[in-house]
Length: 304
Ligand SMILES: Cc1cc2nc3c(=O)[nH]c(=O)nc-3n(C[C@H](O)[C@H](O)[C@H](O)COP(=O)(O)OP(=O)(O)OC[C@H]3O[C@@H](n4cnc5c(N)ncnc54)[C@H](O)[C@@H]3O)c2cc1C
Image (cartoon, rainbow, N blue to C red; front, side, top):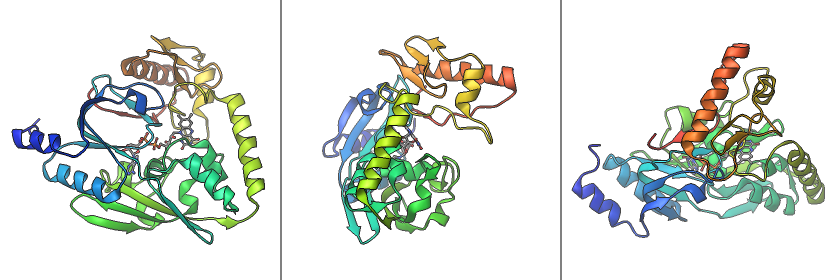
C-alpha cells in the first residue's frame, strides 16, 4: 500500500486520457471483472513505455492489457494502473512481417493470407493480440507463435528498449520469460515473423475449415477465456474434466461447457468469484478422481 502517496495519485490523475475507476468487464472475453483503479488506452509504444517507466519508478503496480482473452479479473478490480495496448500497425517486407503488439492475431492471420503468405493460419484460432501471444507462446492446432518468430522488440522499465531473439525468451508450453521469468513486467512492443510465400486462397480455405471444425467442438461464441486449464503432459484437460463427470457443473452463472470440458462459460452475470470457485472445484475433483493436478491456463489478476 506504500505506493498510494499523494504525489503518486496526483501523477496518475495527471496522465493524459486516464480514467479512474474504469470497468474492465467489457474489455475481457469473459465479460467479467471489476474496475481498474486507473485505466489508460494507448496506441503509441513510446507513450506506453513512458507510463510504465514512471509507474515502476514510483512503485505503482501496473497491468498490461491486450484483448483480455486469457484473463479472469477479480470482482474488486485491479490496483494501480491498467494500460490497454492498442498499437495496431504492421509492415510486410517479402516474407517477413512486423506486427505491433496490439494487433489481433486473427486479424493478422487474414492480412498475411491476403499478402499470399503461409504458415500463420494457426493464428485464426487465437483471439488475443500479438503481445499477449508472445507473452505466453500462444498457439493452436499444434503450432505456436515461437515457431514463426524471428525477433521481438520490447521494453523493460528501468532497462530501456530491447531486441530479443526467440531463444532469449525461454519459451515453453504457455510460458516465457515475460510471464514466468526474469522479464515479468516488460512490454512486448512488436513481433517480427518469418513466413513462407504461398497461395493466399489456400490459406483462407484452411482457416475457414479450422474455424468450422472449432465451432462444432468448442463454445467459441459464448463469453469464455478459451482453455481454462493447461493440458497435463500426455493428456488433455478437457478429457479429464469430462471423465470426472464435470461437464455442466456450475457455480452461479458460471458453468463448465457441455460442448468442451476445458471451457467455462459465463452464461450472463457470473462473477469472478463464481468462476474461480468452479475452477477450484474442478481441480479438486480431477485430483480426487485421477490424482492429476490441473494447472490453470487462464491468468487470475486483481484484488481477490
Ligand atoms: C474463444 C477463445 C479461444 C482461445 N483459443 C486459444 C488457443 O487456441 N490457443 C491459445 O494459445 N490461446 C487461446 N485463447 C487464449 C488467448 O486468446 C491467448 O492466451 C492470447 O494469447 C491472450 O492474448 P490477449 O491479448 O487477449 O492477452 P490478455 O488476456 O489481455 O493478457 C494476458 C497476459 O498477457 C499480457 N500481455 C498482453 N499484451 C502484452 C504486451 N503487449 N506486452 C507484455 N505483456 C502483454 C498481459 O499483461 C497478461 O498478463 C483463447 C481465448 C478465447 C476467448
